[in-house]
Image (cartoon, rainbow, N blue to C red; front, side):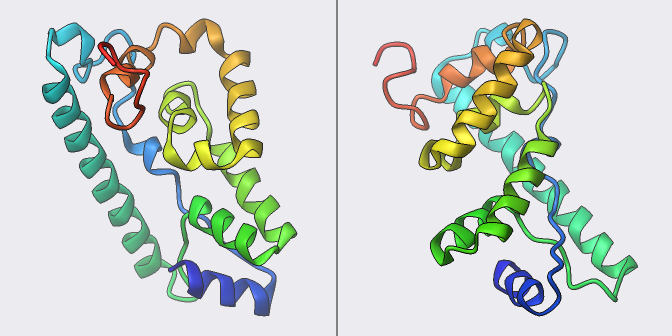
Length: 166
């Protein structure tokens, strides 16, 4: 999808981005059934729950994209803003990279910022990390209370050194 979207952009100066996968994750607030820390689970159970939630989020996002393409056959389909950011960075296409960054920024919410901020993608791009850190700090009063903020440390394999006991 990303390469098709890149070719479409190069010919038409137009690109459509899909919602972030993290937008489909459970909110992870203090009242969420998906709370890992509130369940008294161990790290392996927490990781399994997170993986299950991510798989469901990927499926929901994919279904949304497929439905969009079916309803709008004139559109070439939407792509991942993160994938396009990576590709535009590698190809040094600054305007496209900026568009992808702006989509990521507009997609940040208090519910998904923790998952985005601690993602492998964000760790690779200081400009994205700075933007997301600023968003998290602007909304810190709510973000720090989110179970996602507590649960992120249960993902030791994703963030070595951050998890308890490492």
